[in-house]
Every structure is written in C-alpha cells, then in structure tokens.
Image 1 (cartoon, rainbow, N blue to C red):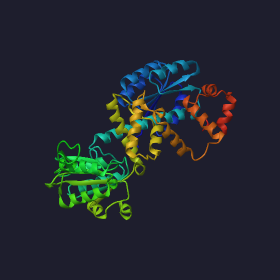
Image 2 (cartoon, helix red, strand yellow):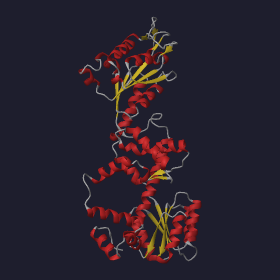
Image 3 (cartoon, rainbow, N blue to C red):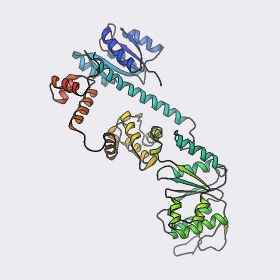
Image 4 (cartoon, rainbow, N blue to C red):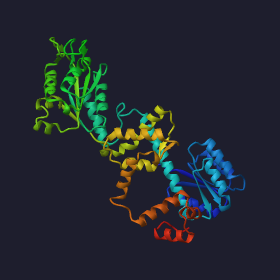
Length: 452
C-alpha cells in the first residue's frame, strides 16, 4: 500500500503536533513546518500529497501557500487551519481549492476526521491512476476487460480455443459480453481476416430466420424482388455468432444441423447448393440439456455446437472487476459526451461494488453513461446514480425493515459533523439544537472519539 506524505504548516507547536498525531494514526509520513517558505522549499524537493496550512504564519499568508500549491501541484489536497475570527478567510480558501478547514481550538478527533476524508480522496485518486495504467497496458483481450480469477480463466480458455477450428458454445446471461467473447475468439483465430457476423435467434419467426441466415432467390416468395445473400453465406471463410440459440424454432434447428453436417447451404427458393466454410459460435442463457428433455432443443444439434463450452460469469460473481470496468466506461463516455469527469466518488464506488447487477456489465455501462451525462463536477457523486439503484443499495446496506429513530439520529449527526469538519458551532446551527444537547448526543452515540 502506498504511504502518502503529509505536511503541517503551523507556528503553534501544540496545534501542529495534534494534527501530526492524527495524520500518523492514519499512516501518513508527516513533516511539520513553522514557516511557509521552509515548506515550499521542501515541497520542491519532495512533494507532499496532503498539506494542512495555518492561515496566519510569521512569514507569509496561508492563502498564498494554497495558491502556489494549486498552481504548481495539480493533485495536492489542502486543508486550512484557522481561528474563529478567520472563518470567512477559510471559506474563501475552500473556494480557491482547499478541500476542507478546521477551526482552532480543535480536538484530536476533529483533525482525524478531516484527515481521514482527505485520505479517502488520495486513495481514490491513486486507485484511479492505477486502474488507468492497467487500461493503458495491453488488455487481456480487445474490448474485454477483467482482472478477476474468473475472467482470467475465461481469457485463457478463449486463447486456447481460438486457434482450433471447432464450434464453441458460450453459456452466459444477458449483458455479460457474449458477442465480445465471440469476437475475441474470431480475432485471435486464423479466420480473423475474414467476416464476423452476428445474429440473434430470439423473437423471430422461422421464415424470417431462414431468410436472414440462408438468403433467398429472386421470386422465392412475394416481395422477393432480388436475390439476397444470407448471413451464413456472407460469412464464408469467417465466423458466425448465433446469440440466444436456445430460442431458435425446432424446424430451423434441423436446417442449421444440416448446414453444420454438410457444410453447404441452399438459399430459400434455390436449387443449387453453395459450399460453406464457417465457424459457428453459439450463445445461450438457457439450460439446453433441460430444453432437450422437454423437446425444445435438438440433442444432435446441441452436441454439434457444444464441442467446447465457455462459461461467462455474471458481474455479481466478479465484483472485483467493477472499478476497472466503471473507470473504463468513464473514459468512453467522457470522450463521447465531451466531458472531463475525472473520477468516481468513494461512496459511489462502494454502492457500485455492492450492487448485484441483474443486467450485468451492460447495466453498469448504462449507469456510468447516465452519470457522466448528468455530472456537473469532475467527480461522479451520489446524485448522478439512478434512484432505483440508490433505493436498492440503501436496502442492502441497512438490512430489512425501517431503521430505529435513534439510528437515524446518530447517522444524521455524524453526517452533519463530517460535513462541517467537526465544527460544533456550525453543527448546532444546522441541527437547530443547543451545544449542550449536541455534546450529550455525541457522547451517547460514541462519536466523540479520543480526547485531545
């Protein structure tokens, strides 16, 4: 794990040491400076990722340091240290790029909460950097991403079967990337220079499927005003991907079996057989062996297609791939929409990794597309997620049933305290309660933490 460097710039030794203690508890490597110029010289030698800046220093103003940091160092996180009388200046500093501020005199717990929030941002930025580097390296397969053990097994199987001229059956749910897997097999095979065509067998009549796959001769039926080359013939020498093969009508299954056995086709209305050299990759989300037992699928066709079977796991079984995929889609839709959304907020990524994705990778892609389209800032936040996803996530995180009133109160107080950087005065104003009431609630819910 990367160790982040933090600097504390404050000429009050006690306050500086307290912040340093909070940072060290979180794993930061900390250095303390009493003067702004000394810090800036050290920053040039060895940059810090997080800086706590007192607004009033003996040699310069904290705002000057902040402006220098934001001009010269793109990814540094800055937190302002201020007294009560300088809160307006701290607010001005946040407008100029400071991520937060704490007000003297503060408690150790307050400094720790602000430091923890900064650490989350740094960790997210580091994770995004790592993921982008992973995407820039040669991916396992073109347009087919994943670093989970399940997907590495899939990639290995695809590479193994690609060079073998046999039919393949992909067993997978909708949205798992069946066509991408089929295309990857084609692109790695000796047929890669020839045509790849795909056809979805679901929801079409036997006549339409027959016309699309086999083509027809002019005058074969009413409306056939010209000869049409079918998909199978157009892919001669290449690969044909048949999705939802389990939905193909039984009579069409007989015709497809004949094509596989004889390696030739007959156009609808035609009399002259046409030799055919194709590889078939079929896909289904059905249990074809069960369909065989009910008479919905031919056993002989199943064995012709099922020479090698590859199982594509649903996204719920490879959730460790969610951040990689989400950042990949973030880059795609930034380019498509002309946006510059840089990252996904930690709490959003938590929701995304906990969601079960009935629509699999395609659903995640749609969620990120929506988020990028709606984002006003450079970070995807909670408000950019679909309401139904938030509702489901809330239910998953909070367990069945409604929360007790005390738990609602505890969470709300904690949220307000985090939002105001543990400034109790501001928290009391927002909550509409006296300071003594807030103190009792913090003590009751164990939110006070360690003593100063």
